Figure 1 (tube, rainbow, N blue to C red):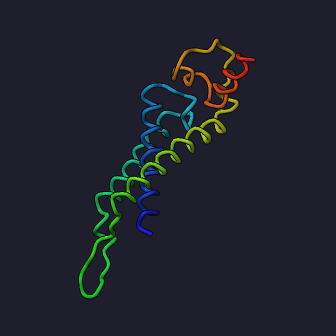
Figure 2: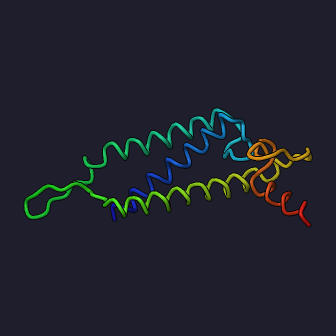
Amino acid sequence: MWSLHYCLLVFIAVMGVMQLAALYNNLRGLLFFPQRIYTLAFSIIAIGVALFGFFTWNDYRAFIVEGIVKEGIVEGSQQTGSFVVSSAAGIVFTLVCSSLLNWRRCNSGRPQQEGLDVLRDSTYFHAIHNHWGEEE
């Protein structure tokens, strides 16, 4: 049960960090919001909520077993697996959501750039589509 809470916090933190990094690097194809201020607010809130959850974990996840107070413990191997799965889910969710939200807005007819710079003018789905379309 505690690992689900941990997964949710990691998922939220990953989305916030990805939005902040995309905003800083002007990767408009990865942003959820067209206005920079909304993206900045979303990032700060998401990262803040996740950090608050991590730093207050033992304060609100304590329980009593046979008269002994125990914290909401997530074991090391469970924590590692949860982190990897939640991080991957946050990345995939960001790529899919931003591609769907920006499908019409970020479809420039400009020549494709190399690497992550492609996401400045197009979405992830557009970049994949253009890459596969060139090989045929």
